[in-house]
Image (cartoon, rainbow, N blue to C red):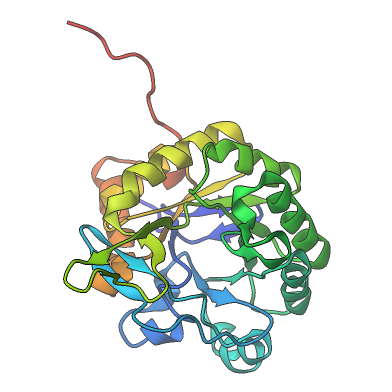
Length: 311
């Protein structure tokens, strides 16, 4: 059976397999290079990038929860200039897709970061994080307002020469509204979901366990929510969808692929098992070979939603 069994496409972006390391959980790739061969992945999404260096939130900013964790890192990153000068040279040597996650607190900030990556070699695509507060709208999160989400998408596209993937927030009533809005604005693909907002309390001190009170919930606890939202998005739009949320092994990944995602991102699992991404790649290969499936694409979008027969 062909070694290309796991090849997939996200629009014009071709991947050797559908397994991508998620932003914020894999650093800039090099942090994992002594633990795994990063080149064996379909791609990596680097830590969220802003124009200027950001220190992030004060600790404590990570708390373990049942089946997952809460994080309030605050999008700490080195800033665009340092990324281009110190991080990108190593990334350019990789034989895998390098996707740069970007964010801003105004529409113009998103455009500035995108413009700073225009014409830059070694960047395969841009992932736009719209789960950020808009300081010009009193802290309203871009991803919860379809009009704001569309404006950000349009601004990034105007300033970019790379494929643009928009990462959707799950903290909305109907994920399809946001999905359609950014599709209509020109996004070439979607990734979802980002973390769910949550909090936890120390019952002895009666204080929040996170310094910032609330944080983003990730891990296996959110997988059923993520899977449902991915399926809803797949049915609502015509552009490719990347599934994210609590994926820890190849069986989890297969659920998202069957639901219609063309690729998956693995996040929290990287903290538990640094080899999680490669274990999933190997598991997908075994699954396909055991069942005589010659292309992973033959699994994508094969969910049977007809009514179950009754007794």
